[in-house]
Structure formats: structure tokens, C-alpha cells
Image (cartoon, rainbow over all chains, first blue to last red; front, side, top):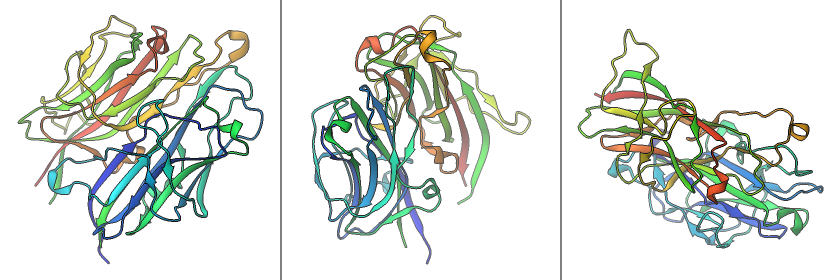
Length: 186
Length: 190
């Protein structure tokens, strides 16, 4: 079957403050029912700066196919790699984040995670000493650059923080997530 | 449609000192109106060395399409992967925010748009030599790394802007030393 890529897009969340809970939905990308396009997620990464020492196990950031299409949150701007108007993103593709401004108030995403598809530790400060680096941490395997994770109509990916205790995702945690996807037809 | 690449270029800013403000434009690339070329950005990275401790959240470095073509700043010298065969287009302009390593600011005038991609870079939670050891400064991608194969396109009259966004001016002090560098190709579709 021939694949016709319509365009490639990128979007980034604002800086999201930890919610002090064991579960924290950070980001979703969804392709709703009736969409004429297929979505291929090619890159999905998280970064974290953390300001508080944590001597317990750090949170795991998990990516899964959500149990249904998520809701609420802050809808993100979709940035095309090429701005030609005839190849803009379809309205059925929506990305949501858990804050509407860098370090702003929470705009919680409703969505139930499914089975973990890929996951990441990010970082923790065992003691508050020395240099803090914040590399890209992949939330889907990096080979998705060339073998995208597919979202057909009525499918979504959900990124959530799973902490062993609420205190492990304190307000000293400053997250962001960003995504590259393509929209195509077959 | 066949893509004909006329030039692949490289450019790097000088070492740019933090401006102690919450917003700091440190680099731009634009494709001027009526250039008769397309620009595909294939790599865009930032590095930082910082010599002062910072115990609050580190700045984000954000890439966006600005609301208009940037002005002012320091035009950067454009180099070529293959100067023998490639022909550079003068309508492709890159700007830095200083004209020498650690030199006086030459501010870039531009307003950012929606964030396309972003990076934390690094911070020193403590900075005394006895407690910190080695300081590393890896390449931090300001566009997703896959643009090596799927370039980010600038059509005529379009630009990319790189801006430091700090939660407080004190988070981007003069002891922050930034540089940005870029690889792009110029092409037409025939």
C-alpha cells in the first residue's frame, strides 16, 4: 500500500510543574474518529529539571495508548515543518498539555493510561550538588524516527508520570514534553 | 518533483553572554522575500557554559517561527560544505547577538511565535570547585534530530528564531555563555 505523507509537524508543551501525586498526565496526541488521515509519531521526548533532592526511586515517565480519547488540558499549537497552506494539519489531530504557560497553573488532562508501550527515567538529584544536565529522554524508541508509531482514527498516545509516592513528583519537578508526527494517507 | 540542492551551509554564532533578562534572542535564520529559493534547516544546536550557581529552574531555549523577519543583530558568515560546487543565496541571512566571543551585545529584534522545539541546557546547582568536578556541554538540539533527514522548511519571507526564556532575569546572568550553530540547505523543487 502506498503511503502519501501530507506534512510533518512539531509541538512542545509549556514547562509543567509536578503535581505532588503518584500519577500525572503530562501530554497526549490523539487522532479522533472520522479522521481522514493516519498519524505517525516519529519523535516523543521528555526533559526534566528538578530542584529538590530525592533519595527514593525517581518517577517513571510512561507512554501508552490511552484507554479512550483524552480530554481537558491545554490544546497545543501545531507547527508544520512546511507552511504551505494546502498541507496543514487536520483538525482531528489534537495535542494536549497539563499547563497553559511556563510554570503556570495546572490544566489537568483527563485520560486513563493503557499498557506501557515505552518508558523513561528522567533524572533526580540525590544531593543538591554540581551540574544538572537535561538531555532529551525518548518516550518512544528512537527508531520511530524512521518507523513511526501509528495512530489510526480514535486512537491516542498518553504520557504520564508514575511516581512511587506523591512526594517524588513534587513542585520542584519542571517537566516538558515535545513531539514530531507526520500525517499521511494510504 | 525533483529537489535540486544549490548549497549546504554552516554558520556559528560567537560566544554570547547572558543578558540578565527573561527573554534573550540569541540566533535567527531567515529566507527573505523573493529569494527564489527554499531553505531546509537540517541541524540547529545550542551549547552553554555557565560559571554561576543556579538553584531555581534553568532557562528554556525555544525555537519558533517569529512573527516577522528578525532585524539588527550581527550577520553571521556563511560557510559551505562544498565551496567549489555550491552557490550561496544572499537572501538567506543568519544573525547572532554579538560580534565577537564574549563581546558586547548586538541585540536581535524579533518576536517569537509558538514554540516548535525547545531545550533545557544545563545549570550548576553548586559551583564551588570542590563540589562540582567536570562540567560538560553537549550539543542540545533546537530542532528534532530527525531534521537531518526531514528538514524544517523556510519558504520566502519565513524565519526561525532561537530565544532564551528564563523564569527570572537572574537565571540568565552574564556568566551564561551561549552559542548556537546551524546547518541548512538551499534548494528548489523542479
